[in-house]
Figure (cartoon, rainbow, N blue to C red):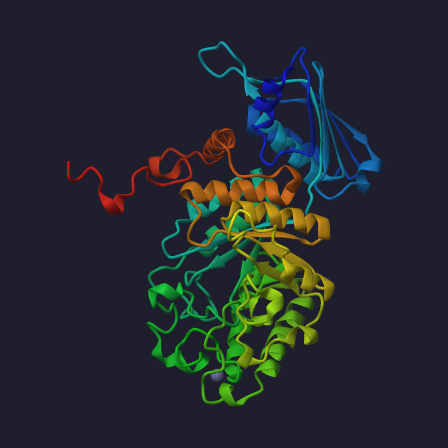
Length: 496
Ligand SMILES: [Zn+2]
């Protein structure tokens, strides 16, 4: 097989596996009674899942043989090996997660049989694939805005799982219908609790764990700052004392805040079926401590007690909290020059990290890269700082592909906990590829990660199509990764 053929096959795979070897020779036909050998250390749920995936992906009923492979139990979580020959497909993995990853790779690799009018089946070329993730935590942060349809969230979850992300942080922006405090949501923009529950269960089926987020410090408006909206106060002036006077940040001096927030976060945590993590936000707490009581208090103590209370609340339930890093580091500190930090020196929160338990996971969002091409590779000192202080760290890029790849390489080299790519309000059009695809490669295999090429864009469009088939999509706007091909806001054909 020449280099071009190898590249054609490799380009189908997102993320790119660590090692692939393709060979010429007779192909393996995915057909009823095709032989599949599963070699796993922990067989729980493996055979049933393999059968279900074969039916779902290729509409075949394989003949599965199971063998115990104790050695695979020592591999990294999610690792797998594939051997394809004419008569046999062998998959080795530690457990179900690795087997599912192998099937995701095989679905991307399988080619429809050639020369027929209609689809008659699929085949695999002979190959050997040895694969494992660079980072343990490979997360994507998805926002549900009042404008976000839940079918779009489902599609994004499905494609993220297909690209081997294993966590999705779900931040709802004023749309979650709290039973304990219904006024903490736009009355006319409530999403369905049953739908969220369905997505949580779907995530388990797909191998991606949903993590709820609730902002316990800044971003209390539940709406983007640039819109001037406030999900709670715009329609409930009676609740003003829970927030600092401009509404953006919670009032930490008010004892009712913690009582109400506790109800809110536990409701979310339970609806998400008690996942191992809860994201408490805590970024960009601008105008914190501006009310009469907070501005005379020792802010560091207020914030520490607040964060530690929620860390304890979740620790009792077996979960760890994740928080954004930026309020813990001060602007103007030369060590962070050129990197994102939001602590205002006058707030005196720069030493707060020393008083926080080390099992809090720090999510360090850095969205930039080199200012000029000739600049040296960024050093990413903030993430290294928190690692040195013994915190688990997630690096959190946005849509800067070079920055994302650089962060992935650094995170692997430094042995950081993982990556949480952010999407915010921009996860369609080219951002979908720049974030989702490049992020998948940067978190799984940063050594081979790079900017999206035309080939990976076309491969990704095939993957999104397969997701659409899984969802039974028939509506135009639900296909692809953009709802419309032409920006309706500019009416480009209207004038002609
Ligand atoms: Zn206050």
